[in-house]
Length: 450
Image (cartoon, rainbow, N blue to C red):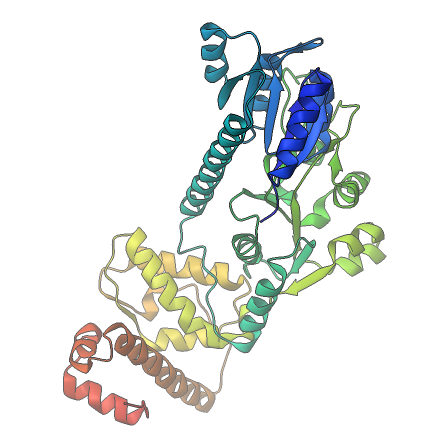
């Protein structure tokens, strides 16, 4: 794990030097500042995990610095050092979010113990935040589902790039699951305990893109009555997902390029750059190279974003994933809608595998949810999917496709039931709602081992 970075802010050179030596020997990275303003400047440029600050400095006290830190970066822990002990000041410091209040000159053991405990609390808070973020996105809907070769290739790329810090470009038609792939990359990365911030660039009005992404300072424009933190800063330490990145106006693309190359952003109305530690994952349903040739997208930004490209195939090119997805959505919406629908008519599955799914997985999910809302029984039938219209097919093709689809679906359903029942055939038959003799006959017909 990367060493934590501690900022030491004290106007006494001897204290700074002593603390720097102690913390460096303990394995921490250190930054030093001789004043509050110097500390703020470093916080804007560098990634800091914890601040040790003197209570009184020539240009302002530690309490002012504490308030500034907690306003901009509440995850940073702050420990105050003081030679002017006061219960009232200590209480105020704790109320403002300080982790501890230590008398000067600080003893080595006390300082190291306080830092260790503060970082433990910080890590726990980040883990809890990560878990809340996952729950808020409705797992298991957040899962990627499929087993086709095309899908497994995508998953292989996710596993390969997740541990890295490289910028990723995800391309695919609308509804293929680009955000789910981005979330999977984030979940498997070292940044998983920090935030995943999805941004639909196409949904932000052009005149608001800059302030939404990079923030603004009070007074930057009419109506800016207070500072606003941009989404890049909100994602600090984590991942920002820029969906439909081609929608970012051409004149602002240079600021995105700077964020990637220099790891710096500048809020609207600001004069100083701010350091950011964010992984960028971008996505588009267009051919970005063509947009470059048309003059709609910067060539240098395209190359910076396209370090690694993950291409998600449309659902019509991986029909073998449809039964897996159907079973997944059956499970999800049975829970969400408090239903007990245990199956789907094979004729429906045949429709699904022959349908072109222009809306991809999103269209399939919406169709399943709508059908399950309308279904009063325990099996989904063709009448529950009136919107799924098939292109004309020759009768012999339809008959062959139907037979093969039914066999495939029956085989997969029986295998899943056997697995769920621990290969107890009597229990599996009960789960499937059929007699034991019927199950044995199907196992024989479908050539299922065991």
